[in-house]
Amino acid sequence: IKKIAVFTSGGDAPGMNACIRAVVRTGIYLGYEVAGIKQGYQGMIDDNIENMSRHSVSNIMQLGGTVLKTARCLAFKNPDGMQKAYENLKKRGIDALVAIGGDGTFTGAERFSSTYDIPVICVPGTIDNDLYGSDFTLGFDTATNTVIEAIDKIRDTAESHDRLFFIEVMGRDAGCIALRAGIASGAEAIMLPEKDTAISELIDLLEHGAANKKSSSIVIVAEGDKNGGAFGVAKLVKEKFDFYDTKVTILGHLQRGGSPSSFDRILGSRMGYAAVKALINGDNRKMVGLRGNEIVLTDLKEALTDHEFKLEDDLMEMSIILA
Ligand code: ADP
Image 1: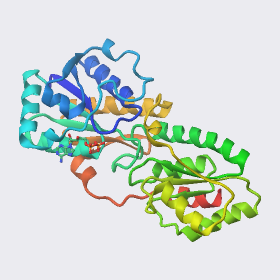
Image 2 (image 1 turned 90 degrees about the vertical axis):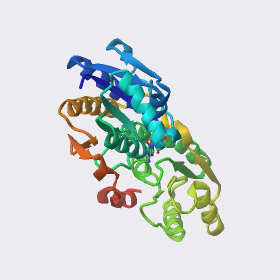
Image 3 (image 1 turned 135 degrees about the vertical axis):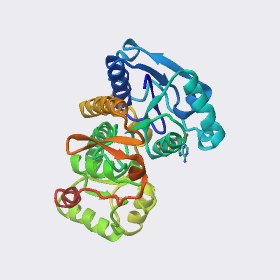
Image 4 (image 1 turned 135 degrees about the horizontal axis):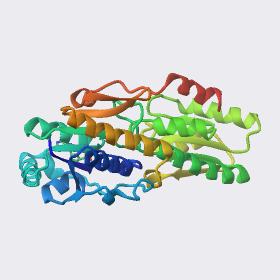
């Protein structure tokens, strides 16, 4: 290979810029040309591609979001779109790709590199931490820190007014952010998609807290919770439990932004570096992941097959014991 292109696709996540920077600088250091594709697969089809220099990624490490922008691109899902993307890459001499994104991005990468002679290595970038093959995804740590900061602030007002708050956090179908943020902020209860907590059980927890003279209570609700999120849980609780004053807060998109934590900066750098090394090593259709503090490669096919998703047993138990 001679020229590697990097792009971000799907949902943005803090740490993507650290990864872009690492791909560009590692590639150039090792003697390759590097290009940046804007707006993911859409930029491939629109030929929205720029050559990158060491300098073009200066001063981006601390920024949230992605300097290459991201997009959802329907056209890439059909053969004509893919063909157009391929022709644009070939025209520019791009013969290898690093894709940063989630499982949709991986699916596109897997299909593209199975059809054309351009190898792809993927980096898991999503705040949800719901991908197989990596203990942590890029952006998860920063998003969890952001959530904790927000809950701490809500705790101040909850405490001052003797209120019960239901706070909904992101994570799609996974409760990773909810579980960790709940433990780290001392939430009284956490509603997770991975665990069926009956409303009566939740009310028991809240009554127990009230009996122990807690003057405020915070319930974290994962957005994938099966009772209809924070509003749904609040409604069900209010039907059966007469608590002084209840409020619902949906944290929303503020969870996706912000300057990446040290963990995400290092993780992004490690993964970008490893992705370039993998391409040079002849790897294709693989994702880079972190497992037990080691960077490992997993076949995209393997990463994309359904695996049982499990939260850590000790954290699950602690979420009840420590509340
Ligand atoms: P994420 O990567 O965060 O899961 P999406 O699911 O939106 O986000 O996927 C990102 C992009 O990947 C899509 O907009 C589309 O361009 C591409 N993609 C997703 N699924 C496929 C597919 N089956 N074939 C080709 N491209 C796909």
